Image (cartoon, rainbow, N blue to C red):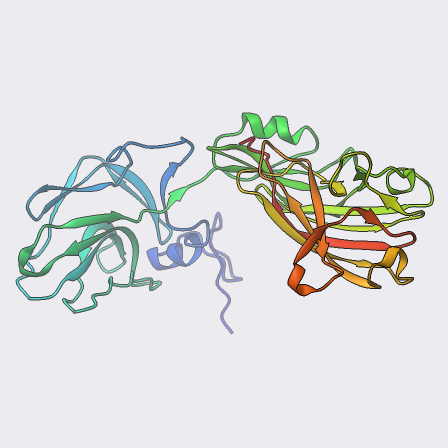
Length: 359
């Protein structure tokens, strides 16, 4: 059995080594981080050609690559002045796809910008970057489309860039996110236990929760437009709601709502409505589904019937209104829900787009 470990301050009888070969270095260092351009993307937008290691056509089939730095297969690369490459002719009757790569080659002991050339075909494919420890390891920078009969080249940039590290805040996570660079995540550890553990994303459009990491958050659903307190605040009504962020600006929520007395609409209101845990995006209007259990068939309504919540189009709606299938027959479609029967239970759940970006 041979045991090898490195790098240590001195060689040891236990297999520890002070020096490492380039192959040993790559074996170790490629796990330090992914292949990437050494630049964090923190601006809202970038001008074409302003990014490092950016390729452009400068003369016919000649390309220029701008200076920049990168990590490739555990090795660090610097291009300190613009580099030029020439794309081979394509005199065939088919298109060819080529690839500009940074190639770490242990046989030459260097990283260099070079072309990986594809094959002309009716349905051409891009060469696959090589990733062989101890051999060649490539980082793709740009796809080159080389049309038949030496047609004009087109370039598609595919460089992967660095990003700010995710940080964690014990509290005041929203304020931390407000000071963080763009395109970054902040985790609210909720160390003061006044909310729940949540991840925030700060980007070009602003700051929004991206996902709830701990328990879902409780909230109290309330009916509006009824003329009976049993639907909104009476102790004979049981109201339970939960919600959690599942993606940036996207909420999953669930409701269980049991009435005491019959709760009809009040005044000129055409339908019962219910508040949402957070305001919705009202750009289009949204639809959610549920069911009402009316096991005593009170108020001439079925013992179990479907319910649909309509989140209206408008300016940041904070509620949804209810419709139900007609009791006359399916041919009559849906009617507004104008009352909740006594001792009935509404169960509702779904996903909707919130309005954290204040559109």
